[in-house]
Image 1 (cartoon, rainbow, N blue to C red):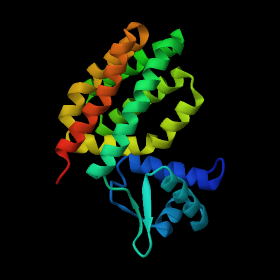
Image 2: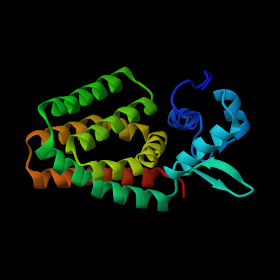
Image 3: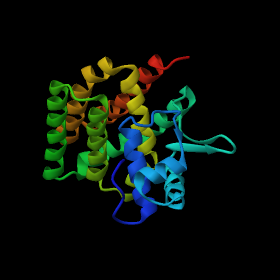
Image 4: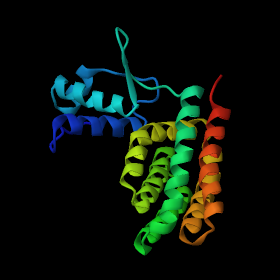
Length: 220
């Protein structure tokens, strides 16, 4: 976050840079975000930072409380339950729709992401980098489904899912690394040529397994 923003609207660029910093672990859940410091780091006005933070608040990534400032949302059991329950329904629909709508090029893209995940695990990349590939895989599934409104529903939830998955890696990295390749390879294979009923069940269980793993490791 040291280089100044140069493209698009400054508020959009500020939102993108701050979001990236959160996903890279510079601002963990619960961390305070200060407008003055962010503006100086990004080389933009406090007004642009404020507008950018408003965008991130709409994504559910941060929260502003009167007299308490702006913070990255913390990961609570209640939030995890709500987000992953909704995600399970959306992922199930995305996977089964992609099963019928995906092109050969899109299917190859899913396989390529699984291959990239395997290489990343073998190389011992950071949890944040692995989660980024995880999110890219699911983004590709939604794109392959070809349903604009479904994709928009996913995008409304995506930032929170990304943050929660980062938290999952933080509290249970070994469990995540052990399963990430196998589970996504199975999804890719079922979307290509699997039984739709099996695919629906596996896509939904993939999300519920992530929810259970995160809840099991969250502090009381």
